[in-house]
Amino acid sequence: MELRKWGPLRGEITVPGDKSISHRAVMFGSLAKGTTEIHGFLQGADCLSTISCFEKMGISIENRGDTVLVQGRGLHGLTRPETILDCGNSGTTTRLISGILSAQNFDVTLTGDVSIQKRPMKRIIEPLSQMGADITSIHGNGCAPLFIRGKSLHGIHYTSPVASAQVKSAVLLAGLYAEGITKVTEPFVSRNHSERMLKLFGASVSTEGTTVSICPAGQLYGQKVMVPGDISSAAYFIAAGLMIPGSEILIKNVGINPTRDGILHVCRAMGADLTLLNVRGQEGEPTADILVRYSRLHGTDIAGAIIPTLIDELPMIAAMAAVAEGETRISDAGELKVKESNRIAVMAQNLTAMGADVTETEDGMIIRGGKPLRGAAIESHLDHRIAMTFAVASQCAEGVTEIRSGECVSISYPCFYEDLMNLSGKRR
Ligand code: S3P
Image (cartoon, rainbow, N blue to C red; front, side, top):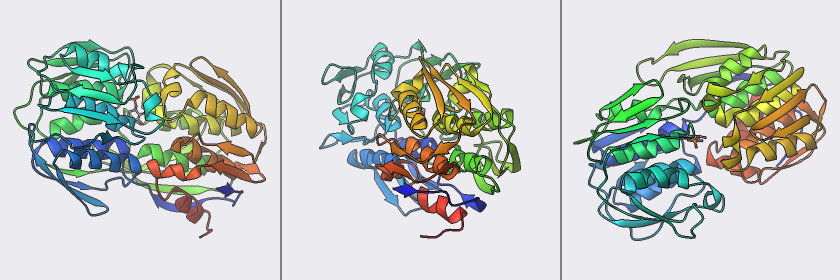
């Protein structure tokens, strides 16, 4: 994929549905009684992996494009898959499904692509084992492939060393089946889509500070789920609008759940001209239209409790910091090392290749902004968020930017390049 500066981005865009919410709607719909109707489902490869895993366990799922119909069979309705479950590139599928599979009355093996087979699974194996689960990392390295033998589980109070919605959700899903109450305490609050949606489906879930509790469920009931646009996908257009001179973009129907909206706070701290319009849906998942206009940005510090609320946006924020005036320090973000790629190393390497001044640190990076960017060969490391970040950065650089394996955007945003190009007035 070769890109060069096209000029300002102007107009309206609707980004695809939220990835975290789409996964959960299929999973909880599969475990519920009756039909779950999902509108605005993300047709990205990760969410299709979730659909395929549940189909292999006997769930009938009709994917009509924007709408998906899941015929749930109740909490105990899954059947033993005849083959290995393939979670593809999806950490959310692998970790959340492990919580569910730990409590079934069958055995299963699950795996994923090369990246998934390197990502840490001990973080779910540990708490689930404390609940009575029997999970083996087949190669003994704490990663997938995993062999899970279904067991009877009991509730625990787990204090997680990391703020991770995937860990929290895996434990809560196991808690649906466990005897007694299950609690998870995290160091900072991570995204709470599981809590919100499990309540919608009829589970008894409560939150107090950084602790979530769940009671074992008798039954979940199928629902209509409206999936808002993914703020993690909107992030590329928020940044593009702010970074590219002359730009003005209205991004419609974006999820602005407070556990996901850290990027909005950081942009404002950097001096962004950013307005939320039409804020609505406060009861379920709040949404808004986001209007961004080109702004002269300046550096900021990003650390602590805000990190989990913008963890997937940090690559884009780092590139934004490279065009901003002054220094940006990102810390407490060691989790970036265990995403689809080591996003600290990969961001530092690629931003440096474009002429930015970046120092990698143990838990983040320091970016001294304002150096002119030039086109370069960018290694995406098959990481969708790296490819999209540098497609945006290419629009602020002189010369040609080549994004290697850029087609990996299909994981979360299949028509990303078309949408970017359309806003620039260029059509393919
Ligand atoms: C996700 C949680 C986050 C995020 C990932 C999606 C989820 O991961 O990075 O893209 O849907 O629960 P962690 O829970 O590992 O932080």
